[in-house]
Image (cartoon, rainbow, N blue to C red):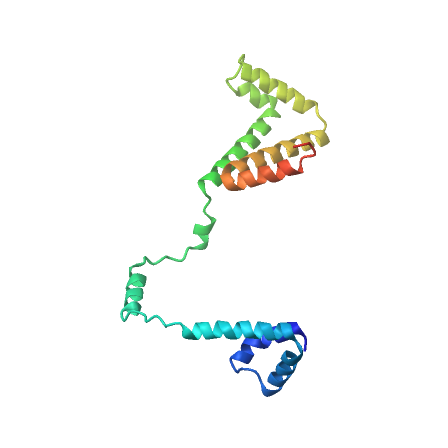
Length: 183
């Protein structure tokens, strides 16, 4: 018998719950192994100390007080599938922001729609015209890459706004640790 196997059986031995064969094998191991004998002596000392402790009597009305407290606790209604799917305000904000960005992206690629907007002559119109010209001059692969990168960055920003301070700081710390610059 190995020490690891003997250690697993010591408490069962003290409780008298080992078979006769297991008891004989464990006693034979204990006769040869000083470290297992020391562990058995420690367990016997713990048992002696536990037996010397006085049991604490529970109050007579303990069950009644527990049942009263349970009865006063408001019942929780099981939530339906629809309630679990209801978006949080942060999720609604993120969806609205992404829908706005997608709508603006489709507007920027439609010069006929841009002319309908009442932005003529303002600085915003100049910016929109520049962005529209830039987007129209790109080939499809570059435009797809730009949209993917911008969508990813916006998604990361929205996620970081929604998740909360602790998760946001953990994410930023993990990114900072992986940057290939000297800290």
